[in-house]
Length: 109
Ligand SMILES: [Zn+2]
Image 1 (spheres, rainbow, N blue to C red):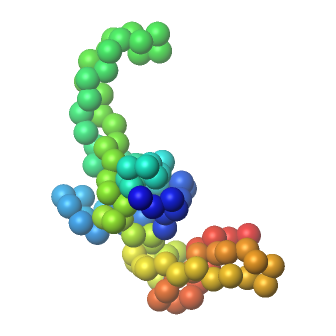
Image 2: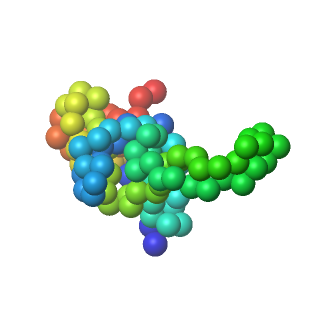
């Protein structure tokens, strides 16, 4: 079981397998224990919602279904395509993710 992931919340990722292949979205949540990830507007599934205080009607709602981490790749802003990610250790020991294709750091700041 992986304790870290190549993607993080807020990353833009591309789906590389399955019925949503080719689509891009922002990572909402990484479910490390499951090795899965929730991506905004990707893999929408219908769920039955019970009435709650906030949503009195209940009924069927659509929400993001989890994708397997191996089915998404980070999108490099510079390459504008899904890329493999490498880790670079900076002089101050901080680790940043870099695009293996162009060498651009993914983590800014
Ligand atoms: Zn790149």
